[in-house]
View 1 (cartoon, rainbow, N blue to C red):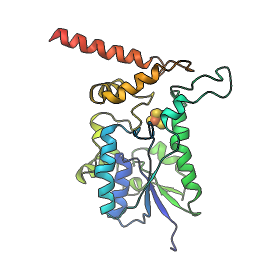
View 2: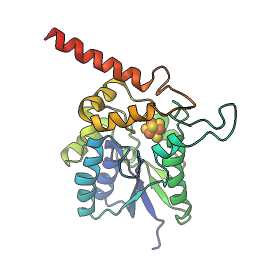
View 3: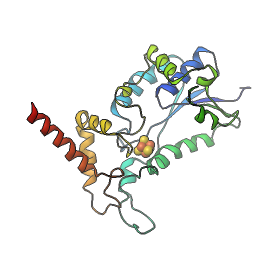
Length: 248
Ligand code: SF4
């Protein structure tokens, strides 16, 4: 191959999928799309289940039909591995690491960034990476590394709204957008209340796993996010349910 390798980073959100659609439409070079899946445990994905199903049942088959090679990366470490590991230094040494911190998420570092870095190390020098940043995200566009990172959305003048429409038209808009505008793990400490409520209502098995983790003794923190324990949020939703039942 005389030209440099071209890869697309793909979260299966609208911007990364629109980037791949544009690459195909305009004949831009694209050798593979790379997706890193964070896992809750060995069997359960960290993706919101509706998004996970979309990725494996809709998006990957469609992209493969279009001739796009998909690379799925996963860390050997899972959320549960990190949660149940022990703190190795500092005043909390020996305690169960427990919930990741908002703004300093160990899951992000160990389950997402590390596998991507390992993959990138094996790429040939000069590889070009397509990043799904839209034309109306000027600040993020300015942070792209010149020559090595390219936004096809900017090149073809696509705003976030255009990316949305392109994916929708192609049948490649994740159903997760009906639930949230934020990509990320279902156990994320940054999850907003409606996302947690969705999990509580529609995925009680996953909800129960989090409550189970909350009961592990000797945790470095009891808090799921900046202010609440997971059990507090559970109590809040139960109360909401009771109030609704009484009002009915
Ligand atoms: S989505 Fe949240 S939990 Fe998942 S890696 Fe990012 S910050 Fe961590």
